[in-house]
Length: 330
Image (cartoon, rainbow, N blue to C red; front, side, top):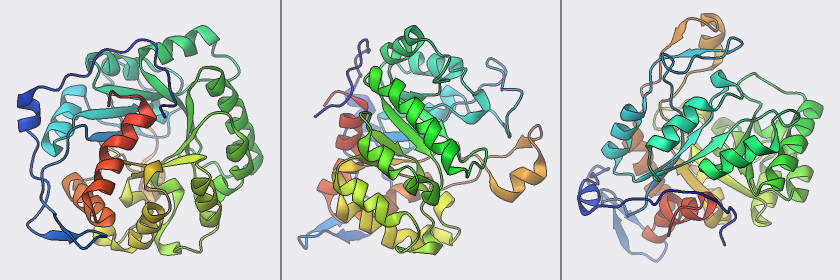
């Protein structure tokens, strides 16, 4: 079932040449599926592959907010399109970054130029943004409204509950989802609100899980309960935010547990262009240029294929689930 009714969307174009450009993403090898069959680790990607979480930064055209917490470099739409082409992906979901606040101009400009290949997640002020603006966002291809608690280090449960409640109400009024970026312990304080929300909820970056904390970390049981009830979608994105181990192999138990629980409620994303964070950001200050991380996105796709174990699950997480969640053509 599609959960969003986008009112005005351009058709997604799939030329034979674009499909022929799908790249080989893996090293030679095989992954055994759950039925014992072998799946080539370097098999071409299926049609309709979607990167469900990226940002575009074009500060010369769209100035950054004065109260930002970091200053990213250039990550233009042509650079994004090169990223997608290199991976062999056809679709993309743009996410409003914190450095633009509630000014979605850069997001909407890139969305328009994607000509039907994209959807977007915007940010509003739930108290002051008029319904006419939210409707215009939806008509342009926005599928969700974001609540970003992590970028400013928000840990207050009462603040998070209020922000979610107000944004979810506005989202539900317009047939949109709510997307939350927060730590897993903070998300556990929202579990009852998420379960009762009329708006679907999307959780960024492994729902804030930390690989080192394992399957018993606070909030993980709540996440599995929400997944089991079909109340949330989880982005398997930005593994480097969940794990500091090279190759992120310590994330395997969490990823496999989520995939076993509800493979139909998961989507994949690169988190391109890979903004920084943590202690380095605090030491740098908000106005010094922050370098992007050097991330092996093709390796992240290989890792997803390994986690999935079979072609059907890989196709669901990379393609079909994203089409359902973000209302791309099937």
